[in-house]
Amino acid sequence: MKVLLVQPGESKSLVGFRKLARPEPLALEILAAVLLDEHEVRIADLRVDPDLKRALRDFQPDVVGVTGYTVDVPNMLHICQQVKEEAPEITTVVGGYHATLCPQDFNCHWVDVIVVGEGEETLAELVRALEKGEDLHKVPGLILREDGAQVATGTRPLLTDLDSSPPPARELTAAYRDQYHFQFWPSHAAMETARGCPYRCKFCSVWVFHRKRCRFKSPERVLEELRTLVGDIICFVDDNFFQRLPRAERIADMIRSEGLKFKYWIQARSDSIVRRPDLVEKWASIGLSTVLVGFEKYREEELDDLDKRSSVRTNEEAARILRANGVDIWGAFIVDPQWDRPDFDALIEYVRRLKISFPQFTVLTPLPGTEFFREKLQELTTRNYELFDFLHSVLPTRLPLQEFYENMARLYASTTMSLSDLKERIRTGRLQVASLRRVKDLLSELTNPESYLQGLRDLQQRASEQLRNGSIGQLALGSKRGAH
Image (tube, rainbow, N blue to C red; front, side, top):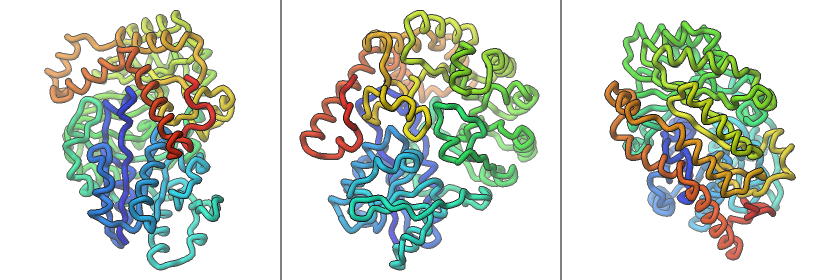
């Protein structure tokens, strides 16, 4: 069969981190790899080439699969609508975090099938069953739409051996490669070595999606894939690369022995860093460039309220260890909608004191599918999923909205890296000149309150037009549209 896998496009209305990062569509490359032996597969990345109709006409697929996160839901639905309008006989399939945790949001006649959870085995069996005309009810891990209702086919167990998953089919995105970038690196490769997280942070959906389990690829499997990669930096997308410290050390030793010359970007918890500062030193010696650390809060009681299971003291020690080893800190902090101006002032001072290289400020957002979402459901000011981008508040703000976004913009304006620090990182190769224009454009938006507010106005106008036309907007907006 012919299978077209689609990466949704980016919202043009909103300021956001996606303008800083457009990584390769790793999830689709992994799914494509399991299909290629039996089927003809293409990937359409609408972030780069938005002409979906041309892709459909050129390829004439039998199946179209779409994946994405909460913020992508309206685009995912619109893609399925376009597919059905172009060729109603095509089977439309959606998957990913939001589709798994909130399948009801895809209960419409444009969506034929939902893949629940991990897609490798389920999608392969689904396409095989479609090709042979077999009963889809016998394929576990699906939600089918029948007579306007959703019918589940049963739970599929998680993959037990990640090493058995084939390398991503990166050749299918070769035409897009020069349009991908990750933060300050235009030449990069994204790589997954583990899935899941053992912690239970109330704002996070990762551990919910992975059913409270953690699984890992072996160091040997990691090295096997690393040998095939090209680029200036490898971005490990695991939620905590240092989750198993002996494994992370073994990978570092194998990289050194192999003589691989990359820079590395990872995510790591502060307590993992503090537990093994010698491991940070070892990774720094083989090219560790940047670590994204979810510091989240600068006050102990707020950190405890998130069930983060860490401490402010641990965060500060982790920052000291990273600085001591010359590793740039990508520090993530969560802004509470109920903050007042002094709270923003204190965070600015804290970030400056910790010497965070690249601070990232996100608004506390109840992600659909989490317990936190259920707790806050009645407080939501909007159900427009495009606004669940972590830069807009979907909960009531204590400050007037204009003033709240003025303070969001002030966070970035007051903590941006100095020109001298920026030049030093360029001189040492830790940042690339080619990325400066992109970073400058993003910061010009993040430091401008009007960027946040204009995005809201654009979405509200588009939503009103969609509702008047009876199109996809109504499904993604819910009853509280425009409450901002």
